[in-house]
Each structure stands twice: as C-alpha cells, then as structure tokens.
Image (cartoon, rainbow, N blue to C red; front, side, top):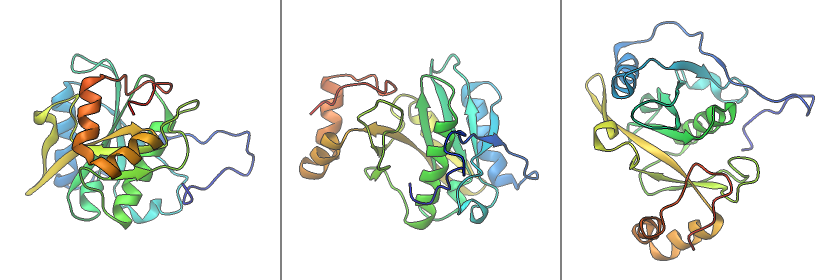
Length: 205
C-alpha cells in the first residue's frame, strides 16, 4: 500500500479516527440508512486519516457495525465510494474482531477504486498480509454472499449502488482465479467452506 503514510515513529500504531465531517447530502445519508436498517442498529463513522489521497475523497468514511442478529462478525462498510467513480459501489469487509486495520483496508480499497475502478470479480492485491499471520495478501471483490441480496442492493439517492465484499484470498487462490476463472474459485470455496475471517485459514488450492 504505497499511498499510506507511515508514522515517523515505527512503534506508533496507526489508528482510525472518528469522522468529523459535516452532515453530507441525501445520497450519502441514504447509504448509511441502508446499512443501519439492514443491521437494525447504529454504526460508528470512522476515517482513515493517514492516506496521502484522503483529502481527494470528499465525504468518505467507513461505518463500523458490531456483531448483531445478521452476523456474528464486525462489519466495516464504506460510505461515499459510490460517489468517486462508476461503477457505483460501496466496499465491505467482515472481521472477527474490531480493528483499525479493517478501516485502513476499506479506505485504501476505496482510494484504489477512485483511481482505477473496482468491479465484482476483480482481484485487488494488497501486497501484504491483510491481518498479522495471514497468507491472504489480496481480495476477491465479490457479491456479499454472507449478507445476501437484500444487503447487496442499495441506492445513493437516484443512483443504484451495489455493495461489494472484500474477500481475503491467498496468492495461490488468486493465481487459480486468473488461470481458471473466478467462478471456479468460488466453487472451491463452496466445496470446502472457509472461515474467511480467520487470518490463518488454509488455501483451498
């Protein structure tokens, strides 16, 4: 993640921060309402202030939603990626524990979307373990299968918005998808259900 500024003191961890932006327009508010209505609870709006491109992303933030009746995992969902470029998408990451790292990853993925564009089926390479001790260093941009089609379809005002899941994958899985297609990789995941949230999960290929 070359566009992430590192602290001058390497021993100081980088942390997410509360979102202190002004109330934004109805389109952004509609995304938050979609998320909170789906999970039936309020989330916490956070930012990742350490990226050099953060100032170009406008009213972007990450909504952190704790475990609930919908999922036993923590949900980190972008609000504002849909306004950065087409296709109009928001990005979602699921973790077993609350983590500033998750905010960093979602914000960095949104910055990549801003520059290049992300679509379902893309493999976005992080270039380092997504969590300490994990072999997964990339993400399959996927429909949010754990949360279902009701979650997937949202609206930012008049614009349809698709919620896409960042599924951590290993280098071997990424190569397999490149050589055999994403559908074949997804069949592997179905045949050998994975704890995708677990840093130490084995590769399916």
